[in-house]
Image (cartoon, rainbow, N blue to C red; front, side, top):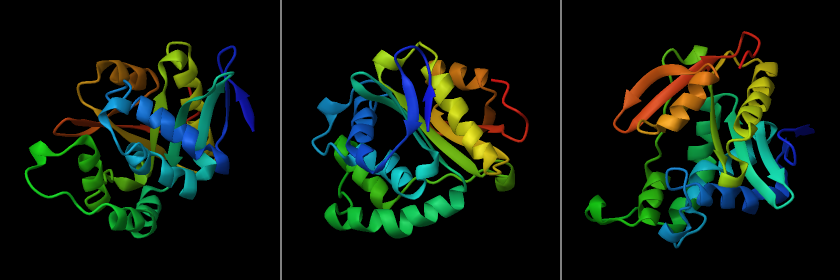
Amino acid sequence: MTTFSAPDFRIRRAGPGDRAAAYAVCLQTGDSGQDASHLHDDRDALGNVYVGAYLRYEPEFAFLLEDSAGVCGYALGALDSRTFYSHYENEWLPPLRARHPAPQGDPSGWSRDQQLWQLYHHPEIFLPDPYGDFPSHLHIDLLPRAQGRGNGRALMQVLLSALRERGSPGIHLAMASDNLRAAAFYTKLGFRELARAPGTLYLARRLVDPLNA
């Protein structure tokens, strides 16, 4: 499938050969939306946590944004979070744990890579309550050249429509609680606060009604 977004951009499903491009977007937006390349020696660490398992286990809900220069964004979803996290913990993470033992010592001294390796061993998993209302979840990232042109909204609409067509009643996401720009974006798309944790805000919206975002 190919869906057109803003002029000169298109949205398509990710394929087997898109891993490197999607990982690159994750790295280049991994510092609160800014390029995190200078913070990581392990350039796959961010993608291993936030991208790779979605490409492998949820390809039906993995959408890429691209322009003439290549992939510049993605929206990744999981239809049923419990099923996804079962694959993630039991299949995806064990090889990563074998390559990267859990870091030792004072966490305040860990590098950015070590902080992510810690997530291989102790993943951050959130399941909403009530779970049945919002079983799906998502991640979305866009490079700066793709922002401010309606591409984020278009990606979200494509992903939410795909999830709704497969019967999902609702979706949730996690975001940094101090990211006011992201909060405004999600609010415009109908997301509302579901829960809070230190530094993290969980938002959700129902999908049973037609998209009006």
